[in-house]
Image (cartoon, rainbow, N blue to C red; front, side, top):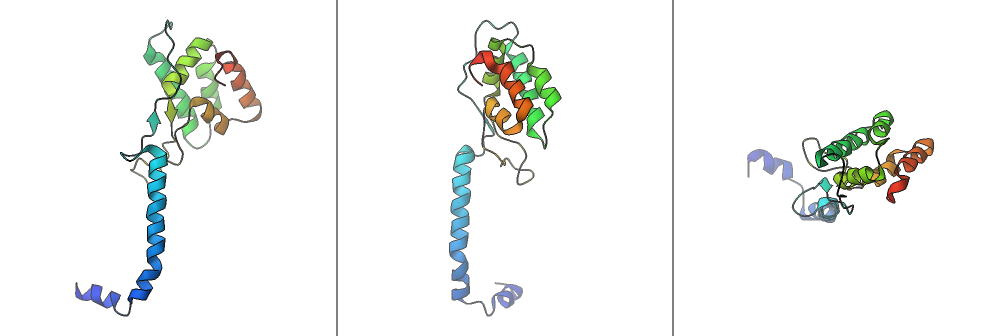
Length: 154
């Protein structure tokens, strides 16, 4: 131990250190539980497959629907919601195409991190309709539900 460390610890007894151990252990347990719920032991998976099967016989290649899903996510992910972009991306799509968008969206967590430079997120992975519910209200939510009405998903 260095001379400075021994001076810093001088006068600190075992009893004082023992007071903090339950708090440290509790913090570790909370972090491990959060990590398990937010993406598993291997890391924080901020995206994942959803339970929506990609339809067959779509008029455009799959990447088109993946790009629309990304556009929807980007319109909702940052602080605030870009409703103009959100609606313009999905208005005019057929129910089958909307299902393809939901399939490509899967489940995504916010990429706004609690700790800059890390993969931890401030939310759990959610489906596109769960994102709509968290981001839209009133007339906007009613409008989005009308767009998705023929899909059976929202």
